[in-house]
Image: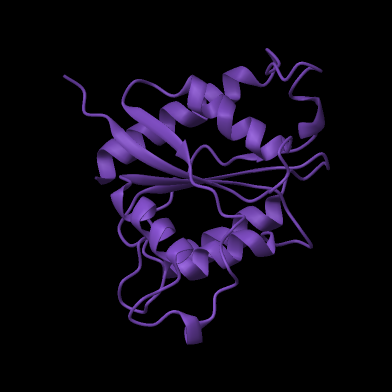
Length: 184
């Protein structure tokens, strides 16, 4: 029997109809039975502030950290803002990595997929995020690299994933499943 790995999915866009959220949901549908992808919401996390993160952290911090800690792997799906990750995603990383020495990210296999309507597909955000993941001790899937340019055309008006995009997303999620299995 195949073990099912719980994957915490962090989407770097807060818009309800964001392209990146649609990609995360499509990946959840394409995932093999060995992966259970669950979006962990980041929009309600207070900005990280060590002054409020004492012995009794804010409930939103504690809940978020518990969801990360219980996951077997991490998937980051993000747009690019100003050649980097959106502030809300950086804040989530800061919250999850604290207090120092107790990071909820440490040792969990991860992957990054970036998408943008622009031509370079969030390349800057993807690589900037990977730099943080090195420090966070998240072994990150290297291949296939996933910078999805022209992402505005990936879904039709009803939100259905295009047949042109499906094969790449399938190969990505299959490679991630193998990566999680190898690194757990």
